Image 1 (cartoon, rainbow, N blue to C red):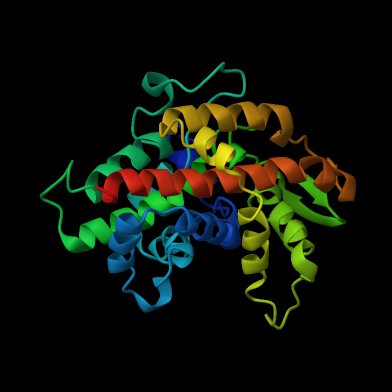
Image 2: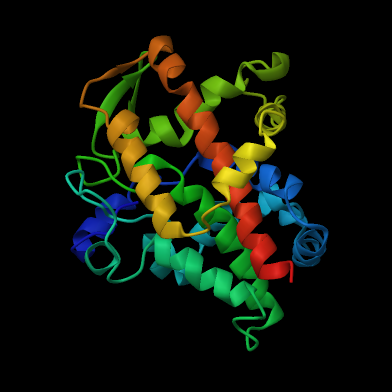
Length: 282
């Protein structure tokens, strides 16, 4: 998540999983976005969804974690999943926080590749991968600990107690809270080890989508600036997501942060649709 000031620090960060929202969170973002695509943009997106495993926008949004992370040739792109903003900073500053690239610049870059109006030299495969990156990075930038945490490792260096199990702060916001929230909508139940409820994320996604109002869409799409989104997530991180070593996460914590998690996922989906509509809808 956080842009490091040394090669060693980058290596330390990636010794631990840093998959924003986890795969289910990214699926939710992609699924919500699909509902808000304009017809022309939806047709264009559909033409890129040719890989069997990534045949929906929901699954395409996981490609950066479930496929690209398996191959060393993509290692140089790992720092693009996050940005390093000091916990004491008032806001994101490109000249300070994104000198070598970060999630903010990555979204702009790959939207440009995806849009033929900005880049008419990219190959079809380059545009397809640009779609994968954009779908993923828009989710990443809405996960507050992909912007900042006092431990300067996105919470990965902050061990906490999550319902009696040891995890770190980053995992709580990536996956733990979502798993707890997935257990409740539309009568869904906790995951079991057999994977029988593998698609419980779909119920969760539906429960978010039906809550989104036209006014919210208008408000959330009023800015398609990744810089603005990073500053939003920084503010949220400071208000709700900073965790202290040894902190106990229980049902009260989940209840207190449910609204924030649900809103960030909804915002990410609606804004991903806005970005794709702009890049592919004209």
